[in-house]
Structure formats: structure tokens, C-alpha cells
Image (cartoon, rainbow, N blue to C red):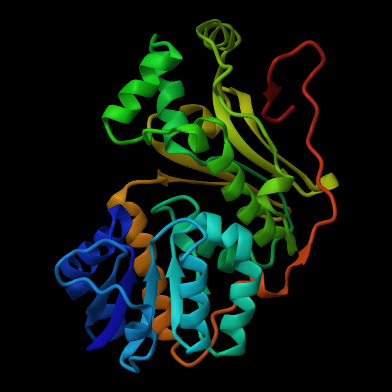
Length: 340
């Protein structure tokens, strides 16, 4: 039996426990051993949950920690401590990866453990591992992705006739949007995700602050109708292009010929363009308790398969990008056009 710990027992953290419990037989087939959640840490007073990180990092039986707390602190401090103790950390925390991913990856390498973050982008879609392993030999010229299920749900419902406020309220009622939806609808969540993706494929560290960011709050019913009349759909995209180190988040007009045109509701779709493979699209649930937790557990398994060594993600060696650009909108147009 292999022991792990979970930091943060909210939506994703509890999902990790569920995935491990319900899919234990599948995990055993892959690892040849069972995985047991020995500790759960949360800042709240919950029965059976600990509050002291030292209890976890000083226990030699703990081999992997799942950080699903979100935010920068105390997630950064706890992750730093764990890695310095040689304990691998798997995270869903895109904010932490964007801000400290290079530093934490370097610490993991120094201490012969791993810092993995598959669940930070694309929810349950095996996106980062695909880029890291299947595209490692490719020269990726562009990534264009629908990376926020909340915005995609809102835009899908606006296309069906609802105005922005009604579509947002419905998303909140169904749990797809937070009470304060600013991070989603203003594009900040997508900006962090496309910065991580751009960093992985470019070998340079793009930060969230370098992304030209525009959300969907200015999209109107008339905009939706005008797009439909042109055989297009409006999607919030994160787009990275290697030429000019261009990186942007904005509502785009997506032509019906693009596979991204048909990505609706809370689903995500990511188009990756390589110089040999051309266009490849990954599609699936980009958020949600169990899909995201499944991605965390996939990282746990990879860490356990590589105990005592470092899983190389490339993040530890990234040099900061000095400047990034954004493509201009066509003259007289409110929106950029994908492929234009």
C-alpha cells in the first residue's frame, strides 16, 4: 500500500479521494499496488482532517501530495516544504503554476521528486502530458483553445437566445460559475492556462501578466446574430502563436470549418498545430469535480511510477520571455477571426 495526502478538501480534493476509492482496482493494475489517502489537510475544522502540514511532510510513509487548495498561499508554502522533503506534488492550481511553476519544478528536480500539474489546464483532458510526450519532437507554431467551460456555456446559451446576464445566472445556478465570476468572464482564468501551454511548447516562461486579455462581458446578442449570419460562432479563445511570441485571450469569430466551432456548453477544445503533424484537436470536459480529479490522480500514478527520480516537464529550465505581442483586430471589426 502506498500512502498519499490531499491538501484542500473542497470540490477537487474530495474528488481525488472519490477517484482513488472507486477506481482502486484500475490503479492497482497500473501500479501493482494500492493507493491509500493517509492524510487530508484543510484549514477548516472537519472531523478526520488535519491542520498541520508538518505532520504530513515529516511522515516518511507519504510519497505524494495532491495540492488542490487553489490560490497562492498557503499552497506555495506547503508545496515548497513538501518538495524539499523529497515528496512529489501534483496540483490542479493554475494560479500557483503560473506564478511559481518554474521555481517549484527546479526544487523538485533538486530533491529527486516531481512537480506535476496536468489538472491545471483542460480539466480531465490529457493535454499537458500529450504536449510533453507526443509533441516533444514537434515545432508547435500555434495553440488555439476554448479553455474555460463557464464562458463557453454562457456563449452557447447566448447563441440559443439568452442574453448575457440570464446565461450567467443559469451558469451560477448550475455550479458552472462562481458567485463572483470575474476570473472566468473577464478572461483571467483562460489567460493563466494559455500562458502555461505557451510556456510548455516554447521553452520560454510566459506569465499571466503578459497575456493580452479580453473577456466576454462585451459580447451582445447582436454580435452573436451577426456572427451566425456569417457562418461563424463567437468563442472565447486563448491563442498562442510562436511567430512574434504572440499570446492573447479574447472573443474570436470561429468559422464553421473549424473543429472548435462545434465545441459547446461546458466542454473545452484545444487545437495544436505542429510542423509535421499539422492540426490536432483534444476535446473533453475542461472542468468539473471528477474530470479534474481524474487528471490529478493520473499525475499521482506517474509520480509513483518514478519514485526517487524527477519527471521532467521542462518547466525548471524556462527562461522568462522579455516581451509578448498580440495580433491586431481586422480594421473596423470588433473581433479577431480564427485563422485570419
